[in-house]
Length: 327
Image 1: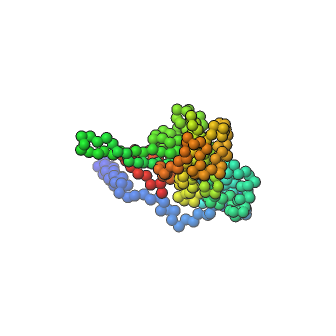
Image 2: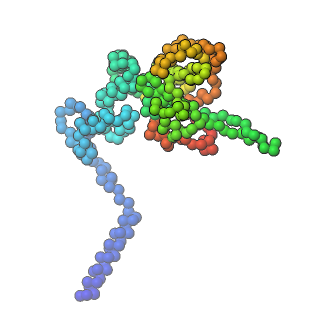
Image 3: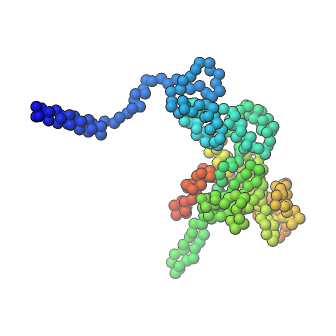
């Protein structure tokens, strides 16, 4: 009896070990059980569909439409586009015009509510979402960066070698819905500059404040360089995007510096654009400060969101990226 019992135990152990060994070689594919199973489409948010729709997914059973709507109402329009790629129900919910109306009215708040409604109805087929994707706008959720490089001759050693150096510097622009912007020209990396590109920054960080205006896809800005001889810095840009609605590139059309009289200088909150309105590129109001149209450092601006400032490729040193193609 004892020998028969021992044989049964050995046989069971051998079968168990074979099953464990088979588990290492046989890949389990539970999703194969879903083939041939038809899933009923989910009704969009606010649908007038009369028949009740039962959603089998767990997240939709635990997350009612009202709560999903409140969550989407609190995220940025660009994250709404990412959420629309999750599933059909989220895509239908994201297409609710309430989200895009709020985004458009916030992006173009300078134009006013009435003017935005007129443009939406006349130029964009009464669609707020189409207006958001088609109408050019300056993005406020990050910084526009222009990376520029040039070659500088070094000091020859023993008259044998003639070294050269690749010098890299950046132009930074940050825009605000109020029509103001911040500008900084520096060799510091993006991850360091983004921390103090705001109106609370100190004078030691040298962030200049100015005003900008936008007409279709053209952006024009101006600021005042303080000093013994006040100088006005003017910039003209053309806004574009690598994909519809991105608005992540700015072509630098011109940079002009010219002099201004002390009597023309506005106050700290004055409209500097009103001072230079109608000026020509070669016009100056102070003979001691001639008008100069800069032809170097005109690389297009690239938009970098705040959450990507630390990991952007624009932080790479010259040794790893001597030239950057904005695209």
